[in-house]
Image (cartoon, rainbow, N blue to C red; front, side, top):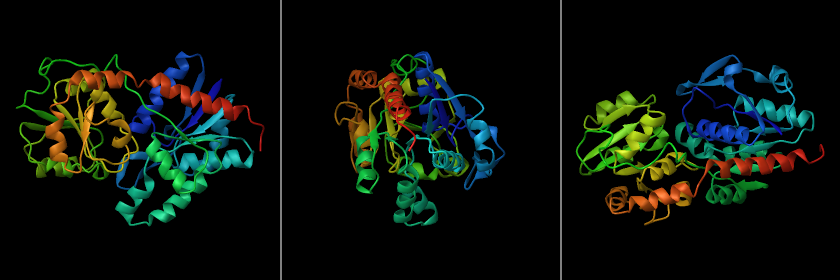
Length: 340
């Protein structure tokens, strides 16, 4: 079938939303399905508040119809709640065209932290936005339970995966990517305030700390933490080498809905140290592929004792094909429904 994805997050952005849909597209296309993306690069854009590198489409409602109807499609999936997502939702509702959606980001928590917007207001928006979808895909059962408790129905637990052909274990130091004192504790992802990086960077740990990624606060972090190695963005094999040369992956976020980087790290033999919050609690099996603890320093130290082979095996049980199949099942079910 021909699937149309509408998303406010797309290349060249580097984040979990983009990476998830890149892999889903590759898997579905390999299965013989058409997959087209409507993204901000097709529109005039403006930088997002606090994150100018994230581009938001300007007034897309006036031109969304042209982009949607430029080629035939069987199903529409709306991935994000931004300007393009809202324009696509309005298009579908006006024409009584069913659509599926997905929830990737904990907007209630982010907006409350940055702008002190009451979470009750944002959850009301989330219910309204996703309430008309035939199914809303969420990354974990924890997020499913959370949104269901807030009154959203038709919530479907999704999954994530790791490319185990790219991300694979290696002996410490074999790539000579990180020539640093051991043990090496590494984080990979956006350098952003909501990632709670201070909780990691302030820890009193032996060895070295590494940050792979970039973002607006990076310069301030480099000045504040001169003993931390900032590697910038790394991709593909270079990212895999950084994982494989480290000893523990540290995931300090308190607000992520999943965290694909945790599975990638596991695939390279790295155990994960994280807080016991939404996201990690659904990904980490304590003592198997990581450690969860409100004391992040303790989690980091105990993670050193976890067998890397257990981490690799866990990652191999989570595939992008499984993730893509859930998307396919939901859009096929939606496409078979008559217009409302």
